[in-house]
Image (cartoon, rainbow, N blue to C red; front, side, top):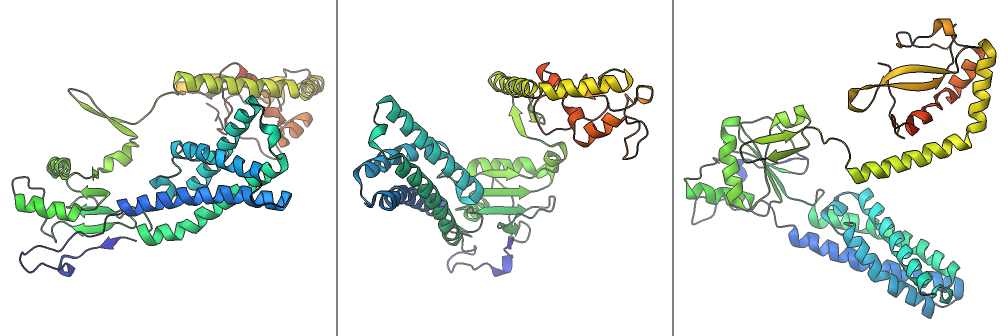
Length: 386
C-alpha cells in the first residue's frame, strides 16, 4: 500500500506557515531494539534447546556437560551470525533469509565446536545423543523465535521496516508499496538551493526517512541531485532507462560516467572452484555411468551400423558455437543437425533404441564429455540449436 499525503491534510504550526513534520518517526532505534531482542532470544533458544535435550535424555536440565556445550557454543554462534548478517535489516524484512542464515550460523558454530573438541580430545566429555538432540531443539527454537518476532517487527517498524518517501515532481508515474507519496507541486516543493526556506522544508519532509526517491523530468535531475547531496539522506532519482537497459550498477571515472549492464565472467577464484566442481561431478558421473554409456553405444551401433553420437552446433560462452554431443536417436539418412524440425511423439525418423533413450533422457548423457572438455558447465540451462 502507498501512503498518499495530500497537502490540504497537513497541519500547520501556529507561529510559522509550514507543515508540521516529520511524516514518520525514526525507525533506526526501533530496528536496533529488534536486533538486540533477536540476539538475546537466540541465546535463550540455544541454552534452552540444549537444556531441554539434557533433561529429556539425561534427566537433568542443568547437566554440566550439556550446559558447558551450550555456553561455549553461544559466543561462536553470535560471532558467525553477525558475520552472516543475521541481525540486519535484510533479516527483518525477509523471513526466509533470516531463517536460512540462522540455520547456517548454528550449523557452522557446531562444526567449529566439534573441530575444536576433536583437536583438544574433549569430545568424549559430551553425550553425542544429547548434543545432536540439543542441536535439533535449538534450531527449532531459533526458527520459532523468528516466527514470533516477525509480527512484533511489523508492529514496531511497519511492514517494510524502513521509511521511504517518494516525491512526484512531474516524472514517470511510480508506486512503491508501504511508502509515503507526495506531489511536489501540490506541496509547493522545488529543488531550489538558493532558497534556504525551501531547503528547510525539504529537510523536514526528508527527516527520519531511510530512503528518498524523486521522479522528475531530466532537466531537473541535477537540481535534485544537489539537494540530496546536502540533505544527509539516501537519495535516488528515478530513471526509466535503468530498467530498460537492465542496469546493474554504475561507474564514475575522471572524465565520464557509465552504466554497467553486464558483469562479465566470474572471478579467477570462482572460476577455479566452479571448474573443479564440474570436473568432479562430471568425472564421477562418467565413471559411475560407464556401463550404461557403453551398453547404449553398443545398441546404437548394432541397430544400423551408423555413428554413435549426434553432434550439433549450440551457442555457448561468449555467444560462440561449440559442438554438443548426444547419443544418436534418429536414422542416419534423416538426421537434422540444424534443428529445423522438432521431433514429435510418432516421428518416423527415430530409431527403436532412440525412442527409449529420448524418453528416459539417456541421449543427453554424452554432454558430460562437453563438461569435461570445458565447453559446458553443470547447470539447469538448456542449450538451444544454433
